[in-house]
Image (cartoon, rainbow over all chains, first blue to last red; front, side, top):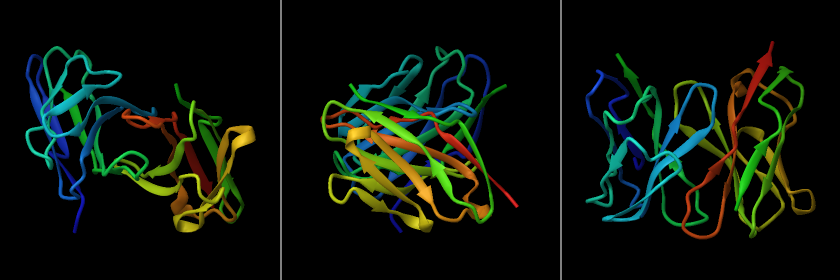
Amino acid sequence: DGGITQSPKYLFRKEGQNVTLSCEQNLNHDAMYWYRQDPGQGLRLIYYSQIVNDFQKGDIAEGYSVSREKKESFPLTVTSAQKNPTAFYLCASRRDQGNTIYFGEGSWLTVV
Amino acid sequence: AQSVTQLDSHVSVSEGTPVLLRCNYSSSYSPSLFWYVQHPNKGLQLLLKYTSAATLVKGINGFEAEFKKSETSFHLTKPSAHMSDAAEYFCVVSPTGRRALTFGSGTRLQVQP
């Protein structure tokens, strides 16, 4: 079945560590997105990519980095520069503008 | 610029009674509008979407929404709430151009037995 796979589901990070969240889609979608969701709040855009080898900062890109070397993959690295990384991270994709955006099941990141 | 305002952060209804979740938007151009539902610790699932066709949009699980341009609203309704409807609901606007979606802050729906 087609869809978006995020891994890991739960991840713990120590202070000063970089961690990478994986996002893979087999929907043949061009655009991919990373959102952050804090408890009881809406979604905020971190980064997005419209095509391979191109990506743009969203509203809260500081402390995060991404790459888009393949159409189906859009990994997110949470760097040590992100001072408050504990949150629920959602990856999404869609074919083009105006179309439905599809979400993965999310990844919980906790700083310990 | 575009924005979305969900007018209620929490809504509580009794099982079997109607549901109304309110959403107002602003957009420079005719937008695409969506409602998504999120159950705890899960991703978001599309309920319905408006893309300039019929103004009354029917979605999954008995939900529907009406696009009212004059009121810049896109309220979500359901005639009879079910316990399984308890979740967080997000109103979303998709602007023209290359930007990503703009999400409302969400409305938590509680369904009382």
